[in-house]
Image (cartoon, rainbow, N blue to C red; front, side):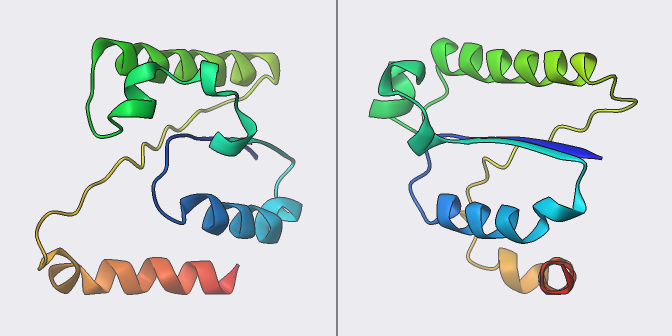
Length: 115
């Protein structure tokens, strides 16, 4: 199994966490292709992503579609049998979300610790 990871316009510690996780799990995968926002030039991100990261303009959607197309091209190039997309643009606006989903979060954290 291979990982194709793209992370852009983060405003939290996502890059640090993702980098640490990739360092830890990369040996478990056949191939890892990862590009983080700090690796990209400012010009590669749409202006809307730089100025208003929570706003989903047509420009932002085009950027996401381009990233998905690149992932599909990589999957075709490497003869992948399956692809799985995970978008992690999540905003928790209900402060009770974590309380309601403690079981799920605990399970995810345990999996991360086991890796």
